[in-house]
Length: 597
Ligand code: GCB
Image (cartoon, rainbow, N blue to C red; front, side, top):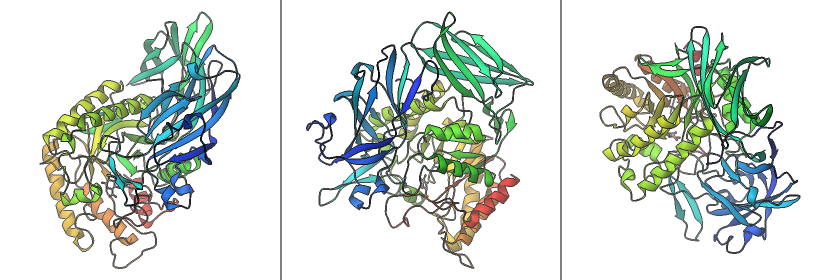
């Protein structure tokens, strides 16, 4: 795996953004490579990069296109053979083959983590170079997320997700061309311990060479506050400014490879001083108990689909703070890296989730789950080994990419798979072990459990440091006039968890009710804003009766796009905010509750 470090510019490293208009062409027959498209697209049109392509056009066949499609652009490279040339895509969804000047430079499976290639041997200096990318957005039962492809009578292919969000795809995050020293910093780890008035930061640095390393920490004013020589060591800060909720104080950790007085490579990383752990039934941030309040989100917005957008992300952080939230889950995939950088600065906590969603052979798992009609055989399928391999790769890439963000306080290993059969436990155990091995900071691990994973049926909760539940009492189960029965059923389940968990903390990673921003009704009916409030009031009543509940992330932050179907009105409407980020009534209820929670 090439270095995942985010691009930076300094005396040793440079980077050029390759965002802008690229060429694009669909390849429905999958014959592009045979026809030599890697040496130039025969009949292309312009497309913005980064972008999800689906909502940019007016033709439904393009929106729903499923199969191979190509991107192309050129770049000029001046002569500097002392440094390597690296091509870095923030992500390509869901898989890609990348060619430089017609020759394959690499391929990648998985649509939500960076694709990083050392293309030095393939580039021409003092000349124009061509990048071609063959992307494929099909879903299958070994891809993360899982799904299938449906073929229509006219031969057209359609994505059939086993999950509840639109299958946006393409080059959806920024593309960079980097030049880095031949001997370079590949990765680093930090592990922080706090005593009364000092922080000890154990660090380790991985490089591609053998020269000595130096680590230095600067405060926000630029004063040097700690330094240490060596690839491993301990940095000490007296009276540190801790990283806290809404106070995202960041130091700069400067890592250098040195040769005498000369820097061979240098990387400035941002460092938040905080600890996170689960102890004695509590979630502790800097040794103080914290109750998680906030949202499950999506990367989703009008027109741009899943493209990262600074203005949309900024608006989202402002709304989170306005509503007194302190946390969000990156349901159901790792988001663009800029989200984590902004959360580091804003002081917002993140539960970082791998794209293990749709692990159930159903086109409506989110609905079927409540009816107990889930499929149990997913983890016995002939493809399970490949699925687990892809799951491990996705986990490795997510943790390597995100482990140094102070905002990331936990990793979520799955969303709503079948977890009541021994095959599920056998499948997930090695994934939890891998995550524990990879994360030097030892963050808590969890996974979001679906309705049928109950205290008496679930087999995986013991793998989790805190248990996460997705529950829809009062929506998929006993909604509307049956809300009182929903409350009883909910309490019965919680009594069960109280018995089995014996003090292990539990949070809610989802609970919510579809709500039209245009419906009001007295007395309430399902889908009205009044009902969304009553639904939440009932849920909070239950949650407040159990002290092992340590967090509530509502579903969802905003309305979002899904595939079409009778369950969805142009998307999922469980947002607290509309898709264009205006509040429904429930936003005010949450704001008030979370002010004092
Ligand atoms: C769930 C899923 C989520 C869905 C949600 C719903 O349990 O995890 O992806 O969007 O339910 O609204 O049905």
